[in-house]
Amino acid sequence: MLSIKNLKASVGDKEILKGIDLDIPKGEVHVIMGPNGVGKSTLAHVLMGAKSYHLTAGSIHLDNEDVTLLDTTERAKKGMFLAFQYPVSIPGLKLSEYLRNLYNIRHEKQLSVSEFRKVLKDKLELLNIERASLQRYLNDGFSGGEMKRLEMLQLMLLEPKVAILDEIDSGVDVDAQKIVAECINQIVKVTKTSFVIVTHYQRLLNFIKPDKVHVVLDGKINQSGDMSLVNELERMGYEHIRQNQSSKT
Image (cartoon, helix red, strand yellow):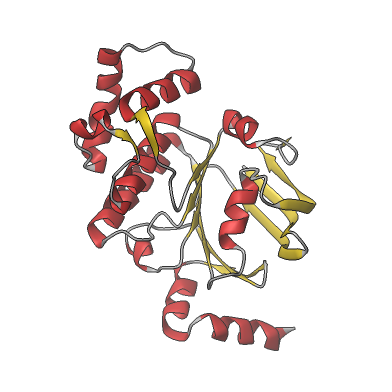
């Protein structure tokens, strides 16, 4: 389980997260929604220990272990994964070697090139990634959709306890969204990875059945629910949620 308690974070003098409380059991898919600038992506990066944010209060526990003060590398070793909205390209680093080293380090193995090809086969087919792409450099010259599918490939190879997806559906077409969604559904079914999916769009949720949907407004989780909340957002918008919540307090 990922457990987040009273999480507060800032950039410079500006407080962005103002007390996030969230529990995500093993194998559940939780979606974080909200308009621009409310702290959704900040939450994703703070969970992974990004140094660009200053954690001012709260705690993060993974399987009852406090990871609040661990750096990004240590959190990854504990089983946390972040898929970036804008993956970094690294010219000169061949994708095939990067992925094989990633897999070997994570699983403490020393697979040869031919052995690793067998590991990749079904995953490449699921994600519709051509094997020839693996001879290119990491994210160098790839389209937005290709980069997002490569992020999902890394996720499948690492088999983390918690996967945090920061707008994985941004800048990709419907076909790519379907592929990403199918990948998420299979990972949950097979490995029981927990997901935190940050998104602006309801469309991805046509292909995924989240266990919980959380609306972030003004740095806090304003409301939580199921797919009916998504449908309400589709009809009424975020301002309706804000006003409705204000009328109850």
